[in-house]
Length: 360
Ligand code: CA
Image 1 (cartoon, rainbow, N blue to C red):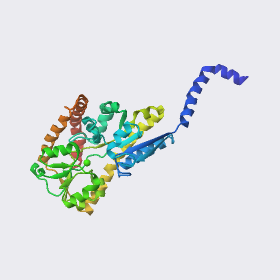
Image 2: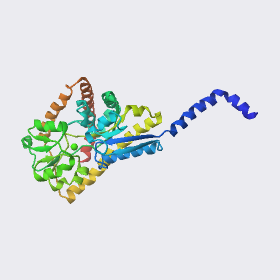
Image 3: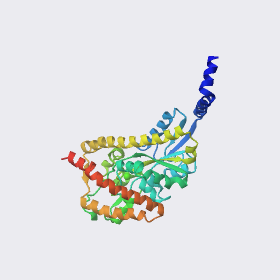
Image 4: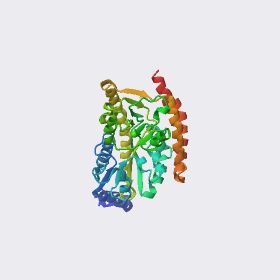
């Protein structure tokens, strides 16, 4: 009797409310989602492929196994440059790549990886998470049924490996260099010859003289390719890729089928992977730079300021032209440019002033 009275006192409403909270939860817990993640990287490629692996592993572990993700290296399920379409069409539920690969879909995609003289990794995250960047990115990918999320950043890259010294802008004339994308266009306007080829072919091309120079990423990835054996000078800074962001692509329909807690887990895992990659690159670049300079006696040289100034003028031309492509590109360009001018002002008296002070 006592028990019955108690139930009557707390009221049927509470019991029903309690049940309604519990029952669907149990039902959801029983549902397991099996996802595929296609990537634009060779399987287990250091820093990038391993970030995709980490992202998949975190999602599986954070969800207690309710989402299982199988990661595919480039060409295992689809070629690197078909990742966007594969996730858009639902061939895979997730993808891992870099947004500048999709400039054929819209020139504006390039703003979400990197543009010459654009944002650093820290500035990029600030723009994406707190400066309206991520909303614009989602708007850009919405017509393709895709939800994008930043999932890593290489930090400032190196200008590249050269077999001749660069003392003034004319030294770039006729220079045959592997430098893809907008950076490549800037080199062309400086009189150079830009080519694109996969990372695996760069070593032999430098060795045979088919290439005079190549950029790749930074000490961590460049040491692994052994470029120090076939190029004399290692130039900095990577004006063309000041903070290249990796992206996760999520098929919108598949995302919407997830209960709310799993949706959050997917997005938070992307955020955690984003933090992980820049931390890893910063730490491993330091170590690799030591090996390159101390063990392999690589000559690390700064591009002369005058050369950088001229490259910046040409870069502004090239990036400004993106704004003329279509309304969406203009909207994104305006957002980035206004953010960059704000962050440049603040950065000058914070990070930049501090780093200068530290090196006095
Ligand atoms: Ca690069």
